[in-house]
Length: 280
Image (cartoon, rainbow, N blue to C red):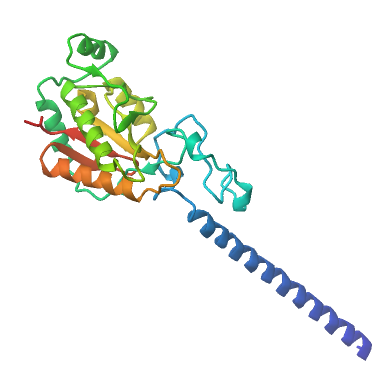
């Protein structure tokens, strides 16, 4: 082999190795860039747990305000590209909510058997099998309709009805007042907790079970009108974060639990609450 051929062969190999090194370097840069972008996105979340991880609960139909630094597709954008609503234009449910679940709030778990026993022992409770029995319960005032109140609001309910036992409705109203009082005069005033599930017929419970494997296969306390779920706290102030709303909700749940008024099961998407006894 001539000297010129050997030189050409070596030159080709050098060029090939250089191209491989350049390609690898580009891949590393791309990976690093993606990680940095994700890190920047996470710091703009306005609540402790990403909404996408809260399965089984619907957000309001209203378009959520976009957090500074993100667009509607969760792609990172420069802050000056985001047009934020003025404080006077903020409506309840238009901001990203604070999550109320076991990832964000620490409270002891009461066994579900205790929830079931408590539900059956309440004065007006009965097992609601279907819509006909639910309507009967309303007609004889064993069940009452529930609407938005001070400190709380009712979500769109797909697998339950906005009715509860009268004493459980009273519990919800008391918790709403106490929560609103705790936030009064603070930057979080006006924040409310959102109830995402109430009384289910046994038929609704079966439908939910096909969709959510975590739904109990035994008789649900929701079918006694004895329980409701809290999944979010909806902020009324875009300048406020989730620290105070989350802290005050935890304090409220712990106080009611320690006083023997409620039983709690912290779940991945909500706090399941059952009335234990009526306050004397």
